[in-house]
Amino acid sequence: MQHPLKHHLTLTLLALTSLSHFPPASSLTPCRTLCGTTAINYPFSIDDGCGAPQYRSMLNCTGTDLFFMTTSGRYKVQSIDYKKQTMVVYDPAMSTCSILQPHHDFVMTDVESVVIPPSSDTVFALLNCSIDSPVLNRYKNLCFNFSGHSCDELYGGCNAFRVFRSFTNSSPPCCFTGYDTVKYMSMNILDCSHYTSFINLDGLMGIGPADWVYGMKLSYAVPDTGCGRCTRSGGACGYDTETGVMMCLCSTSMNATRECGSNADIGGAQKLALRTKFHAFALVVVTGAPKKVTRPFLWRVDWF
Image 1 (cartoon, rainbow, N blue to C red):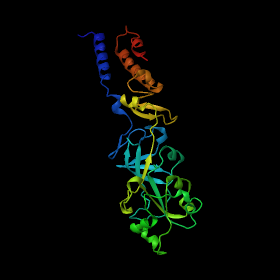
Image 2 (image 1 turned 90 degrees about the horizontal axis):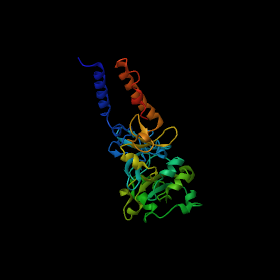
Image 3 (image 1 turned 90 degrees about the vertical axis):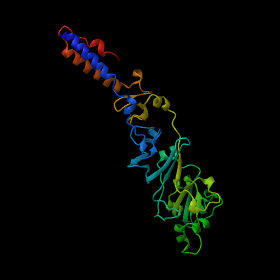
Image 4 (image 1 turned 180 degrees about the vertical axis):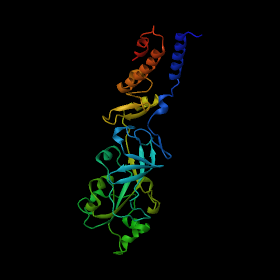
């Protein structure tokens, strides 16, 4: 018959072996990296606590569609270029060459305006403006020449905008301008009834408005927080949702301050959780051991 102590040692070795075969932390990171076919990489996220805190709650994944969220609505994300650090979004409530939409403002929060504003090659066209519009009078310097295009061309080349000519048999004033104009002045203040926006300013010379790319290109910067070290260790870059402090997310139950796989770098709460697991394991060994073995867990537990 096998000696009881030898039997318990065998069970201990088997338990330790099973602990060594837990799935790696990198396979349990809580941050999703896809929405439909769009990659979600740092600094963005669709899960709270992931990515950079400056971009918190900016993106929403609904089904397979990714949306950029602002106070004025949901703007569908067409693409994200992580190399050029740009995001192209489309306003479903915006007028375009093919559809005339109701009066609408584009509004970003103060944080969004700083960390991910529309790029310099995004043009806003203010349409059907009154002759008393501030951009035609006191602030007329805010309007600029857009690749040789004119208001007449816009009203004449777009089916949706021809209606503005029907009232006076002439083209009402319009203004090609940048994001800062609509940032500080609403459409009511601008005294223009509609707006549209398009991107790739330098590539639209000689191209009619029916072929412009309508939407907004947003430009962003990647915060330098040492995120590369975290991702190379198998983690995902994130932050504490209460304090905003950057963290390396290693699994659903273990985080680190800089990288995964380093005990010295694991946060206090996670370290306590690991210690609790080993205490529980040690107590199981003690329960089944002979009475002579009184405190075998002391040298097993104090690893941290």
